[in-house]
Length: 131
Image (cartoon, rainbow, N blue to C red; front, side, top):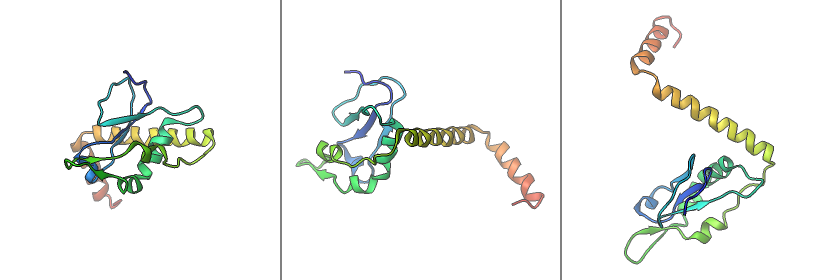
């Protein structure tokens, strides 16, 4: 089954769960296997807000990870389903999502910048005493 864009994906089985709870938001339709679950936000919830709420609860969720009989780590669906997502007005959720996109876009531009350009810029600032 194909999931729509803006689905929130969370890994529920695998050894990565020993230390990390991967959570991501899809930009395009995707299909997943049994090692992941998808959350499709209800009306009135912004997907970016929910995704980041899950990321903010990383430590709590990590504490719910169990070990299957064969040693693989697993996160039971009921632990995800019972996570409290803050009730925030949709306008504030959307404002949060805009800020997240701005930060992500700025980060992408910085990563894409030529390392020599960044070094030269910093060197010039250093020689001017601005650092």
